[in-house]
Image (tube, rainbow, N blue to C red):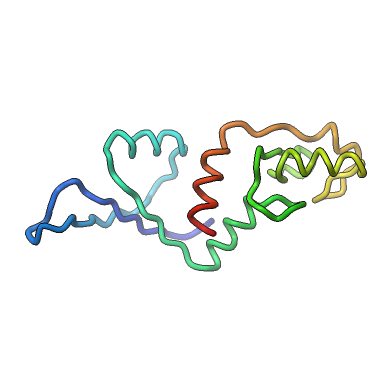
Length: 131
């Protein structure tokens, strides 16, 4: 996704009215998700990212299985089209009847797929946010 996003960070202090105030923060760099998540957990802070409907649809499409169109479960990467394609179960079933990639149609598909590790929690959280 391109463009500027505005993040709001919930602070742990109370404002003059006794209500938690939010501080506007501009995102200027992209950091690895794990590092960002660790900092948020340690600081006991909340971050909200606002997306337009078009942006949310683009994110949802990017992380949806190309076969079942649901959010990916146990995602698999295809080196032939350099894409995270979809669920392991869907791709295993695809391979039973097809020898080509479901996205780019490259032959010998079985030699081009690999498991993606460490995205399950992020994909679950993402699904809860944009569905």
